Image (cartoon, rainbow, N blue to C red; front, side):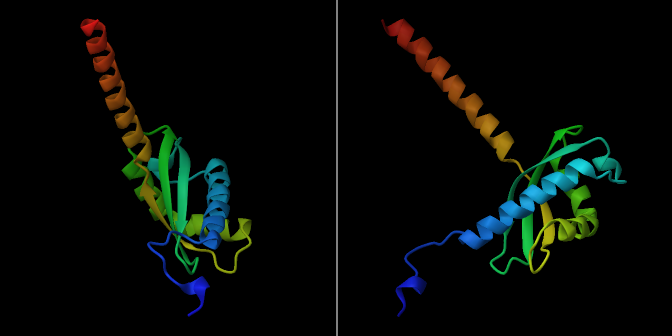
Length: 137
């Protein structure tokens, strides 16, 4: 058996997938910053693209996005982007140099909210621990 193909544990995305994901992410950021969308959920909304994960064959891409300014509803923005995905894919195909332009699926990126909630919890614990240390002395 070729050592190169031997599975030694759970495998993450390949370098090719990571490069393609970053290429798509950068192109999407440019497209979303320049284009005007007719959908009311996207009017006046700045969208940030946190990550793009591509399938092993690079024909599908999952885009994690969240509104930066103009909306607080990440799910509504992701749904609106999914409705506009054919238009966005057409623009993407003209901006990237890949054999196939991937089908796009937009998901609300909740990692920022989760990180903020964790930060708040850690700050509470730090405050409590600091307060308790002060009492013990």
